[in-house]
Length: 190
Image 1 (cartoon, rainbow, N blue to C red):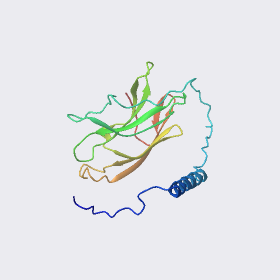
Image 2: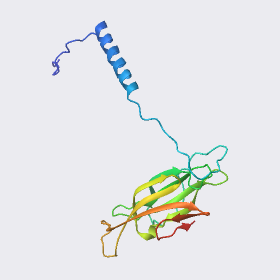
Image 3: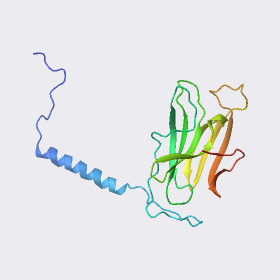
Image 4: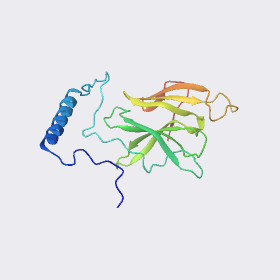
């Protein structure tokens, strides 16, 4: 039999003092955690009255959706997603940033709005940013009924696709039955 390389423990048997020390440590951690709580949540009412659904639904998911993006032999990938009530009906929509699952390079992103059909299944209802515009999305968020994103792009076809050299900020909001972008480019309905 080979001797152990680890020295024998100094206290191989538990004694009541060990249990008292453990209980004291746990009580101290619990007491400290009750003092360190996050700030209380606050909700602000919007200025415009909104029609609320009787039972708001959960935000629609993205799994299994057929996004209007052409990827050839690879599949589309949902890179980012966020949810919020964009049209003021009390039910959340999901906004997804999608690109092709390329093995290398920086594939352009598309931004799509997903809602629930009358039968409850998720469906794409609008394209906020078409991937053919050749932009990559950063700083993406849904907040106060608006979608915001930073768009990284290219000033010419000579700029390598690894290194975008233009930056634009976009904001989309639901107005008069359509999504309107606060900057020059328009949106497309699916």
